[in-house]
Image (cartoon, rainbow, N blue to C red; front, side, top):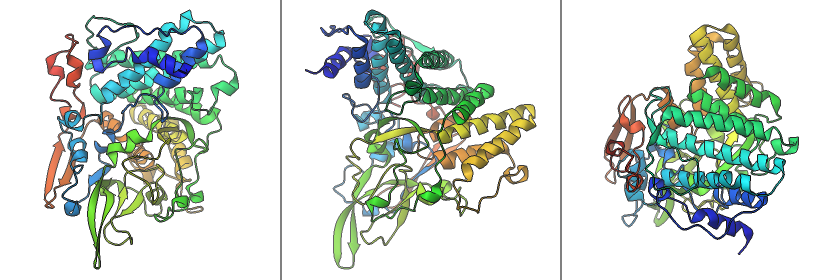
Length: 520
């Protein structure tokens, strides 16, 4: 048994399913780490959500179908009658309360997040007792704190109300140790979770700054300083702490050599040629600061495919195709000359000859081609990218809010400048015209629309809709008989916040029964 497997077992014996398992005593593993290198290996095996991770975790599989960037195809009457997966996407698309029960392993973000948090906690618990240099320990601790912060941020934005709406509302149980306990654990408030996140991220920032520059700025699949600072800017943006959100975003923009990719250098993909497809989620992309997550997590449900029957002339054959597509509302939000419309949103045709209905599919910057497989994904590809483009948008929104609330003209100018730097790389060379106050109109509204266009299908939109005020949201599904069915979330609808899964209540009496409603 290799060392990585040994120390993965250290955590796997105490992994839990929601609150049930982390409150249930279990036997300890015989493998106890003695040196810091063992904890470093433990991080890779049980704390990083990655394509090569030993334990399969699903954090995002349902998230891509919640928002208004997706729509259901109206022509699914051609679905093969033997197809069993047709309604999988509907469960998330309709915000069904039975989603997690009926989808089984799909979308169990609650259990998956806590499994990863347990890996982080185990590393932090053992850190003081292992041999190693101060530099080595600081490095491992910074990574564990940063990763744990991200997973709690993900959890609280799924299962807690938006910070700006009710920070005193119940969030999620805050588990900060891997030690076994039979004590019940109530939900901490949204505010308490955010305090833990920001405190841990600032400590991670302090620790990683003690390391040599090459470790602070590494691009080797490990947490780095710019990622920590970008995440801080995002968290502060959600907290409506505009000054700190802008300060951290500016730091990422100004202190490092990440560059906005010029889409003029990216040809429009040819659906018949794999070689024509750019891979935006790549360490060689000048925008990429850090990557996390397994692409299978992203595509397993978000672009669920079904088998359809296609007839061309006298020939009838079956083809795998997507159920959900990019919404007209998103597509129409792009200017005619905006290159993102064709570089980010990929055409999909239901026939082999590219005739018939064509749609833009919700894979955004993910690598696709003629031989991609919706069910198995693309192997060791990444599913989440943290990019410099977000820093520009975080800074612009924070500055726009300062201008709106305080009338600070300097912040207005800054917001326009950051938007121009991003947008000029999104239009054909020589055609872009800088923004003016008159053209923009409501600056905050414009920034948020730009954020949608730039970050579509990067798993920001649902969380953004929540923090913007949870306005009315409607999805239209089409059944096999082509009949439209409407699903609606009203303004401030409780459906904007997921209910804790039933499994969380089985051994945690501190959770209140009104915290649960079905499985959503």
